[in-house]
Amino acid sequence: MSAGVSAPLLSLRGVRKTFGTGAEQRAVLDGIDLDVAEHRCVVLIGASGSGKSTLLRVVDLLEDVDDGQVLLDGQDVADPWVDADAVRARLALVFQQYNLFPHLRVLDNLTLAPRVAHGRPRAEAEAEARQMLERVGLAHKARAYPDQLSGGEQQRAAIARALVGRPELLLLDEVTSALDPALVGEVLDLLLSLRSEGTTMLVATHEMGFARDVADEVVFLHDGRIHERGTPQQVLDDPQRERTREFLRRLR
Amino acid sequence: MSEQGGAPPGRQGGAPPGRQGGAWVPSERAAARTAFRRAQRRRALLVAGVATVVVLAAVVYVVTTAPGWERAREAFFSPGRAVEVLPEVAQGLWLNLRVWVVASAVGLVVGLLLAVVRTSRIPALFPLRMLAVAYVDVFRGVPLLLVLLLVGFGLPALRLPWLPVSAAVLGGLAIVLTYTAFLAEIFRAGIESVHPSQVAAARSLGLSRGQAVRHVVLPQAVRHVAAPVAGMLVSLQKDSGLISILGAVDAIRAAQIATTGDYNFTPYVVAGLLFVAISVPLTRLVDAWSARQGWRGQLSGVAGAGALR
Image (cartoon, rainbow over all chains, first blue to last red; front, side, top):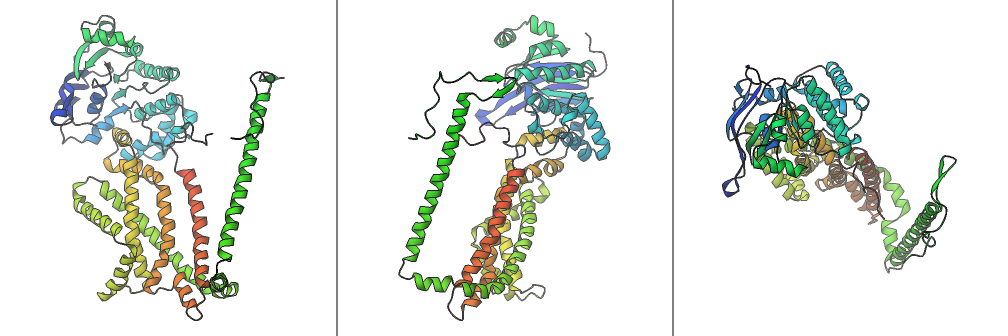
């Protein structure tokens, strides 16, 4: 699979992020280089604490980087003078814990950003939101509050909320980790169908089967560094590095 | 301890729980459990009733056998005097209610604004933030009585031409000053109780910091603190009686005036009963409201939220 010659939608160059100060300081991201081209899907794997979530939050500008570049269409959005709200509006991050707004009905969860951040008329925003709920199979839950939904339904609603802004890049942070095994399937099915429509994705996951199905490239993170990268077959079936082998062994 | 409700059903007892003709029929075991629980409820009611009667009887006995009871009854619980003074005291209470409504409205709005200012990170608001901190520190620390005296007698001494000198207005102002400080702190606690991931989700969707506060943080913050805020408002209603020390003729002052002629203190009891008659329904209303409102999205799904054995 070739990535094509056009510039990737997202490029990370030497991204470094530390938490803590002094002796406590530790690099969660220690020089990350990564490209995600349009319509491609890159999957991040690695143990908890390896930096997957931080990497996604850095891309969504929820964390400032200590060094390096976050290039979106060639523009370095890590620069503090860039309008972060405008950048975030082009991206969408789906959280492990859904983070739906508990005081708003599902429909209002979906229409909040279009109405408030983008000034869309309510009727228009609601029509689109209903379409999106239809798409994720939750049309009948539009009037429900988040705590009246199952975990799988909440996560599908959160994905619908992310998609309603028509993001150019979908960031998924272990979106099935908080779910019952029985509910994981419905969410992964939804993501697979999004993938087949060509949605550009950067995904952190522990679901190796899912990684195999959706990934154009699998990236193995350990201690804030990329230890191995390649096609799913290369990384998951024939890992070259001992750390990768050990990680995959422990998952089985 | 308890032998109520018969022995627990034995393991071998009864037909297996099951269906007869499709419909579920409770097993003997289930029926025995239901009967046991019913018996326990009856017993609890009985104990509560007996305990209440005993306590009330003891109180009545101690009070009525006290050496001064006859005179105290005349001075504090004279029915005739109570009927006589009721109109005056009730009219005074009308002032309390007006002070309460205005002070509550101002306190809620300003308190919320102060809390937002204090938790915001806008550099231009820094001086306001410092002022808010100082204001809250001072007015939470100074006793309400002192604030009343300083505002009630100190402000008029400045002889500012535009300043109203009515005791009710100045008293209301003093109450607002104190209660706003407390309300601001409660709202701040509410704002800080909203999990940062909610802000992250809102910002991630493209909302600005201000929009996230307005549409995501504040609605949840206010719900979280609905119960303590309502408690402050009930307490404010009661403390509105303190404006009487400035000479405003509220329920307490009206009662005091009524006692001067004959040293019969029944008017005070009447005033007290009127305050209770307002605050009790208010408290119940607030409880019912926050039970309906306050928990949306919080603990409604938590197992074991009900009563446990």
